[in-house]
Image (tube, one colour):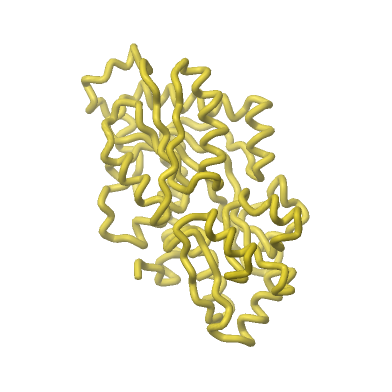
Length: 317
């Protein structure tokens, strides 16, 4: 996956970049309203609106692990007025899970900037009695096919992470894919499903209130709001790849606009107010990078995630 060929493209010759922006900008979020992507997109949108002196409207579009949102942006004009805000799983894993995507991620979406970095959370309903990964594995081994798990859709990083765990420990756990993170978390709290992977932020209030129990977190470290929760690697299952959110633009968006957005988004993340909010949502602020450097990091991440997807034979059912 190259993702970034359009960074240096001047295909949109009609765009008046010197006058950009002169009307509202729409950020289409690959996720549901109130979930992690929506939360982080709004953290960036408000200060970005002040800097660009135009409204920046956040528009969540849930479904198919971000495919619907990605497709909408991929088919939008490359004029700097429609952007995508997507989790890494929507960008990295969908091409493996859905071999017949309605868009070409390599050609149609241009990386702009990374927003945040973190892992994902493995949580359970307190009624299970599970306290950690080992408890879940032991129960699943003793009750094959009885412990279903949730994720926010086929091809999500939560789906991929659990399929890796299943393969590692020889577990039979049916997958219950949800259209939105919000509905998955609601069902976890209501014990309609006992365990599941979620994003890094949505379950935090429910964990603090005792409505959900954290069993572990993925990634290279413990994250700001869950420092007392061991990583899966600490618990014996090596899964250290970090996730992120990214801003993308349609192919053909002029490089001047891409680079302006890149600089402003990274600068905003370094301000104390935005940094505090990002860390408050259990992510860390990434190091500044050009759009081309972000594109290169996506290629590196793709090799890891797509390799695991192929290893676990993850595919659209």
